[in-house]
Image (cartoon, rainbow over all chains, first blue to last red; front, side, top):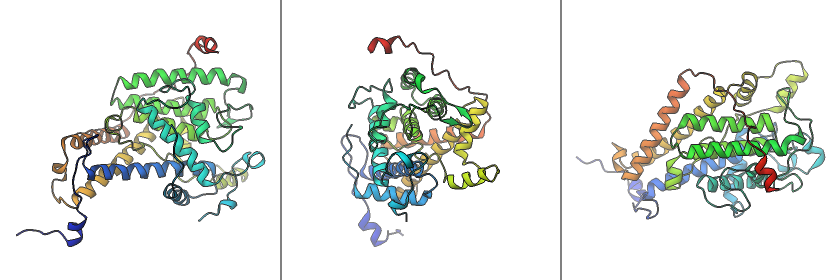
Length: 78
Length: 297
């Protein structure tokens, strides 16, 4: 007997294709991008905690950092 | 939620410069992170900075503190700074000392590039660089911690194959400190009580007292191990959702290799934290010859 996935899972299942540059699948790349974004937000929160030492809690710093990234930071020059 | 206007600036910033908005601080930190990743990948960046060589500290500081133009990239001019009760390098010595430090950093990072996956060496260089900037040099009026933390992440990334070859550059140690309530610490000090320091600050103090980098290396190893664990867990969750068993089997060869490397690194870091270590002394940062510096001028 087959264990059929739930309807939602079927709909969301990623269409795998390989990124020709890196050889990584879309699923893998999506997870990597998500983790990169998390570490980027955490690094910004860390900077906010230093700048506003004693005035911000860690969760407030993370909230502000997330907001800043979501609103879009300026284009980053090299 | 914090109202931006209610956030007081820290220390002597109150008198001299207006309080930056959180988004401004975020932009500075993020720019420095982006530039650091270009340097890790040996890509060209604007300005004279090459690899991790001379000029890197001021370059990163300029990006981080761009909202205070008169301080951005400028070395400190006063001698009032004390770290854990000890005076840091004198302001008039800073230009030469910073140059020597950057030459030391350049040499060490070159060595690291030729020793991929030498995690002990990576941790040693990252810890030494961080300690050198925050506790020995303290080269800037403000933002020394931010420069040091961005730099240490860059150093740890140098040996990451997934960053260099596949452009997956997750910061190994994005957050070093726990929640630090400096107001609370000040209150306790005023009351003559010993404040309980955050483990990160305590670690820096321990290194300063014992001149041994091991506590900081262990701290970094534990944070890095957690960061890798979070990546692997995210992968597992994503794949296990569709492929209940043997999720590894659904990875292609390159992905399999990346996961294997990460798991090996994580295991090494876990073992590193669990074993005892002999003393790893703080290096002599300032032995480089100043000849090149003066010749360039």
